[in-house]
Amino acid sequence: MKGFVPPPRLSLSTEPLPITRSITIPEGISVKDLAEKLDIRAKDLIARLLARGVFATVNQTLDSDLASDMARHFGADTSVISFEEQLAQDTVSTEGTGEDGSAQSLPRPPVVTIMGHVDHGKTSLLDAIRSTNVAEGEAGGITQHIGAYKVAITDTNSPAYGREIVFLDTPGHEAFTRMRARGSKVTDIVVLVVAADDGVMPQTLEAIDHAKAANVPIIVAVNKIDKPDALPERVKKQLADRGLMPEDWGGSTVFVDVSAKQRTNLNLLMEMICLVADLQDLKAVPDRLASGTVLEAKLDRGRGPVATVLVQNGTLRTSDNFVVGNVFGKVRAMFNDRGAALDSAGPATPVEVLGLEGLPQAGDQLVAVADRERARDISEYREMKAREAQLAKSSRVSLEGLAEQLKTAGQKELYIILKGDVQGSVEVLGDVLTKLSNERVKINVMRASVGAITESDVLLASASNAIIIGFNVRPERKAQELAEQEKVDIRLHSIIYEVQDEIKKAMTGLLEPIVKETYLGRAEVRDTFRVPKVGMIAGCYVSDGVVKRDAEVRLLRDNVVIFKGKVGSVRRFKEDVNEVRTGMECGISITNYGDIKVGDVIEVFVTERVAAEAFV
Image 1 (cartoon, rainbow, N blue to C red):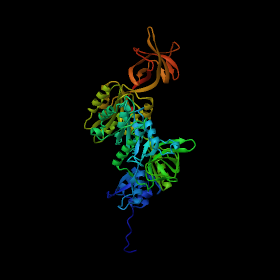
Image 2 (cartoon, rainbow, N blue to C red):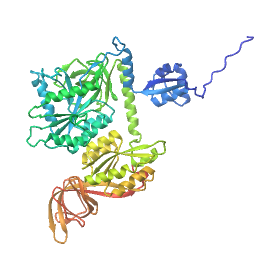
Image 3 (cartoon, helix red, strand yellow):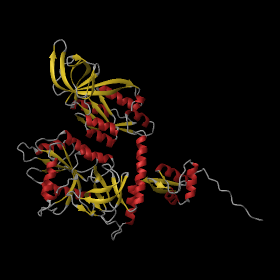
Image 4 (cartoon, rainbow, N blue to C red):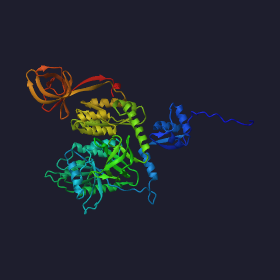
């Protein structure tokens, strides 16, 4: 036809469009949803994916990196939010509002974690508070302990009468930090229990470290004031020296003298908790879909996976669908801390939830959703990503990896947890390492203390991506296993200059071949006897692994290294043998050393020099 101009043939442009707008995308977005956000046709997006070598259908889920690349090609910058954050945004935009247009948030009870040194009376204090403040007739109903409970102030003379407080009965700061490592903010206030007759102890200081790292206000409960040798003023002095200045000394830390045994000042402690909580203006919106945090989870033989959940916002109801971590489910039943069945649970309510499809982890975020299919999709997507992450090489910081980090611009921060055999060594090492900081790497000694490397140290290192340096001390067995599981780097030394040199080399990326240690076994010393011309022989029981002749040994007393040397001889029934295995008794001599005592532990190992690149 005359005058007709055919349309130009469509070709797929490889040039990205200029960035003109910004969009927000959730983790795991479908091709269809991404096309809608970009305001383009789904088939154009599929064609672009095909050009990248990705075969995708309209309902296929894309990971955030690929979705961001596609969005940039179509002229949009992206910010990625988690599924929980997206749900929270959607909920806020649709929930009821007050007269001033703001969401109807109401005051909620504070959530309190009680921490402190072992035997300072944490459990006694919790039990005393719970039994004192449970209403008459309910005391016998506390049949089911779920690790968290809510109490009301029942003293009619108290200004806080009728108010409620949620107490988390965790096994201590290990659980507290494990949850913080997973990014969950559960606790509003930490009550630090210190025995008036004992004073500040190592675990007290650890608890302070953990509370400060989580940026949570601390209330000090000075317990056991009924004891004749109680010195509450000494506790104030010790804690004031560590940055917790009492209010009556001009500071900002609340101190309450209590006695769990005599039930002294328990209501005063709860009033102070309410007062500190009021300063934080704690609020939640009950009239929305619930969100909360898993405090603990277990596999019950009769009921399947069971999770203890602290509802933090909204109201959780039976039959609600939910996503928690990479698990989804539907609330079949809920029980409170007294074992009573609930139909609904509002903000700041701890409940036991049945109806999970799998076992979540402590610290996972639970969100109730309206769409069960969406819940299933997101849990499957996360399960897939978790498997990929497990297969991928761990990105946990190590001294060798620091050299790689230095290639990128800006100052890096190397976090260190320092454990030593005596306070003097710890202080010197702390000063030496801190002075190594330069414009490219800053050394941050998070904790420096005396004693063996504990699970608490490993958990703090895991939460803060830190390296643990042990000076003349060893990790406890459980701590060693946890470090391997969490991929925390532990370095053990006995010479200060070795530590200094290793950190310096790590900072400059010049790690030389190092000595790798292979653990063989350990034996407990149960008796000692002196043999003429041979020396001291330790009668031992091999509690783990194998003891070999000519292997290297460490002699441990209370987990502190006393001596390092070599196995002189191994005897069994007066005969020399090459090795003795777990569960057997034997006599062990250590070359040129005789100061062995009953109760000591002989740790056996071999060392070999390996290239730094091969040591992870």
